[in-house]
Length: 317
Image: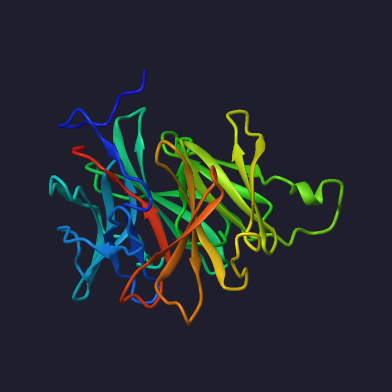
């Protein structure tokens, strides 16, 4: 029986995407924890202890935040629980690592520890993984495996006890298991529209996690996006079809930079970033269950890069 994360509280509250999340801006690389009040279309930053202009949220797991910090000429990573204020600095970054690298954060149930992965890009455009254990030997373990550079957002997605990213060839999802730190490749699904055809795909893939499973959004051709779920048998199952034009969205102005799925217990929501100079600081949330679309505004923000659902807890590490 896998052990559970150490915690000082009996409950962990999962907060819906439209209530609590974090913003990542790729231009300034600043991050903020955000909260959306009920019955409001505006979302505002919250005065969390981690709201620091030199601290950049890279990932979250069980209420813990993985943050990249810059102080003068020094930079590095640390893990913090903003609720309990517990924090731990990670070992010095691998050579050539910086804030633009891809970082993943996960809980290893087998060994009851938290691990961080850093995806390093080599001159040949391949990806080399470095992994460290929070509170461990204070060192990075470099893998001998190199895989094609990932496409899309620069952070791997955590699901099914592994980190995942899509290769630039858009033919495979590469996975790194958190426990055994082993690599494997999973062939991406064939679009329903392309079944029986032999031409190259024109789709753009984005990955996400929902209820512990790996989910993939596939832009078959604008404005339609198909959503697939990877089963325990490593088979892709088609789940939803989202037609943005039917929703009144201009597909030329909306980009799903990161497919964010959040389940609030009654519906599944998909976050879509809107790239429209006339409407800065806006993103849309689509409810799969009722096929409704809501606009959410970020007053004062000129550009929204990505939002990630966040889980509030008293977990200790």
